[in-house]
Length: 249
Image (tube, rainbow, N blue to C red):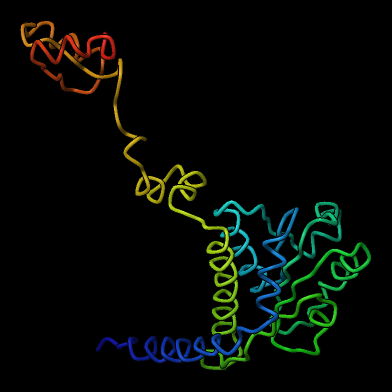
């Protein structure tokens, strides 16, 4: 007899959904300060993190870049071997670490503090190394993990990602980001295609496959081949004469 695993999945999903509701208690003046700092940034918004937090930081950075805010992910471990040079004084560092005590972050924090680079720290422990070194401290709510041991990063990564997305969407609102602007950064794929404007696909001027109503079939085929649209538009005499200079072929 086949086992039914759906109840286990539902249990994990229900637990995470309930834990994510804690995010509403998180939004405070520190969040406002973080948004203001990002809006006023003259350089890049650089995200960092180790392990699962690093994966979250990489995704949030990609979201910021996709809406026109210069951003990239900097691996704290790789930063020890020269990548610190990517970080400038006018940049902002947003560092994710659920515990806030990840040892690999130490040198990055020292570097940022030495050169007075602003840090937005995201962690669940107010007294952690990360938050003590941060200019703006975003304390993520402590949550129950949804796995059987209660130890594997599941709910904690979800709520951290939610926080990052809330930062991005709030900044988007303030910058009056629109579908038209989004298309500029997403010209390809399903997103780009869904945002095509009429002007992007409209044919006009000399590209129009126009012909007189008196032209024969041979002429029609020639025009269709020239314009490569598979059609020809047949116009009455008056309309054709009035627009011939615009549609000349």
